[in-house]
Image (tube, rainbow, N blue to C red; front, side, top):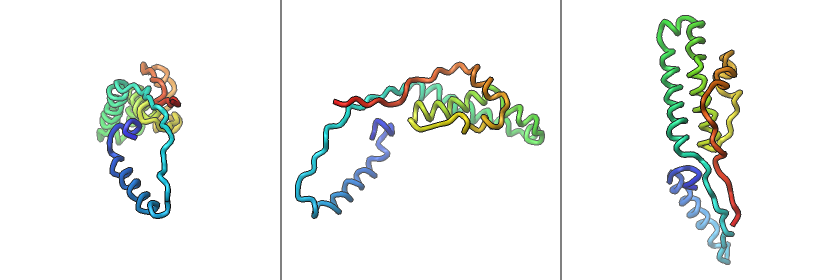
Length: 144
């Protein structure tokens, strides 16, 4: 669990579940349950990619959107669209939300769910010109 969630945040929850199971089952289970051998888990996640490229892209996307919150830009829909659809903002959003989810968090993501996908007519062009390589999948399991 610590490898998958990158920390010990779930330790207390798992300890509580373990204690609850024993509290409910110990009087009924008359044998000693055993656990089958675990599979060996290896992480193919590129931590450097996640910590530098993805987090940098998330910061860049936030900064880019924040720069579009200028009163003169907000008052003009054309300027707002031009600002929020800047290729750098689209590329940072893609790296943060899509690559971050699929490569670093091992969660599903769909490009068409990105906010800029439906909002920006230059989405495909901006993504195709991005200079970000997607790392290998997050986890692989090897039976031992």
